[in-house]
Length: 447
View 1 (cartoon, rainbow, N blue to C red):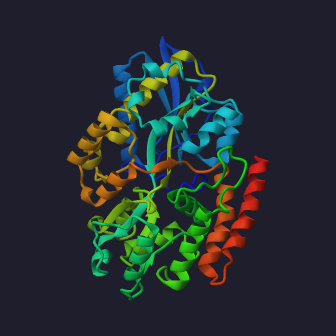
View 2 (view 1 turned 120 degrees about the horizontal axis):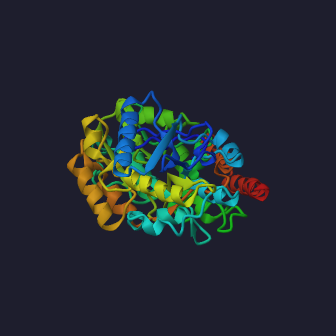
View 3 (view 1 turned 60 degrees about the vertical axis):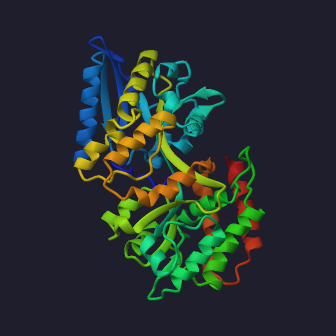
């Protein structure tokens, strides 16, 4: 979800910032014979450890590249949707600027991104990045950005409750029917235990509807982005499943209109069996909600057909010079694109500073680079990596899909459908989908 940023917490290091100051692309790009680049997403001063790492990494880069001067900008968060479009329109972006995956096409459409196609041949790490992530920053056959992280949705579950309910904690549900059956058994434990929880407010219900629709092979909008595609057998299956678990099985508890913090509290307290999330929720459950790493496991999305992915990367100001683009690519390679090293990949450094190491994502690389990255991560792991093996094994076979266009407006519409089936026993699913489809069509028509 772009505007609310619920899934933006980095696996090892906090999500960092987008500065609101004047940007380097308007300044001289050379100083004392050096190529000068401005970059953003530097951790704020309040994040002392992460900021120190970021500064140290820049210092090391400049030592290796004495002809490049890197000027970082900081604030929190990395990108503020309230100001992002205004900065774009005003031409105020840094030379190398942070974006969510869902921003890529928009930035290109408003002509604020440099075409870097001819430059990536010099980026030694580019071909090691997962193809599906590279494709996100490729528009009409041209490359406009470099991915930095990638995550995908999965099923977080409580192994302890699985065992108590007579379920095999090493065989999490692979289908929605299996999830429903497991939720019934967990809820039958009583004492306020909930089998499965889902979001249904603050646009988060729409976000999860999207993830659940993807898992069953459906889509929210058509391939051309012009029509809603939720009033389908797949869309009906999503709402029918939630309605059945809520009212027929009573496995979702009586309290509804939940948001992410509510569900995290339930899971952290040991009273919830399962919910959908990305891996970045796990350290939050432990450090903030009272959970225990050994009890928390992760599986792929039930359904076996698709999963919602997200992440971020960097694009280049359309006014950046060729020298600045080349320098920026070198900086990205040093900071984020070398397996087992850099700001997000120095697992030994992260472990020394009590950051969780061993979670299955972010997962950026493919092939030999991924193998190396996973080996270094496993060697420095301080969380039970075996708890996430099912996610690692099963996620590779799923179709990866990003959020739909106009995601937040669409999620607001879908919230109403999800909340209705969870709060009204007589909710008419066909009517809900038909009405939501019409509203989404109107959103897409406005552009």
